[in-house]
Image (tube, rainbow, N blue to C red; front, side, top):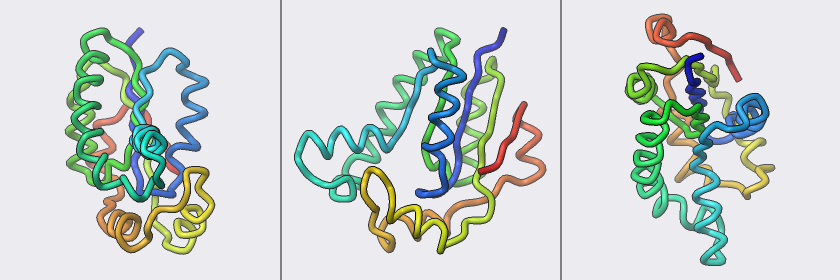
Length: 158
């Protein structure tokens, strides 16, 4: 059986981490990569808020993820990737790095500012700065196109 890549895509507050929890039950041995968890650990270590270290940690998390993903690919391990992945290009590049995996895309549809604002304000991790972090990512988010969806074996929407 082919290993599975589950890629969650959407702006902050769109429900990616909530859905990822369910997939972690389905694939309990999967490598779980979460930008939020990494940023939380750093914030906790330094006794600061998540939003205080967001920009400092985000680039470092991508480098760390690259190393872990390489190991997962080489060992044919299931992967649950919980990261914004905002553009079609980003999603396609990430999927192409897993040619031997069954590919599952879980994508956000129609970034609705009021709902995302509300979810952001009730995040367990603490809210993110709307103007510096969330709003730019909501604007940057590209919904999957019909052409892009052909690259995935399964597609679900948040």
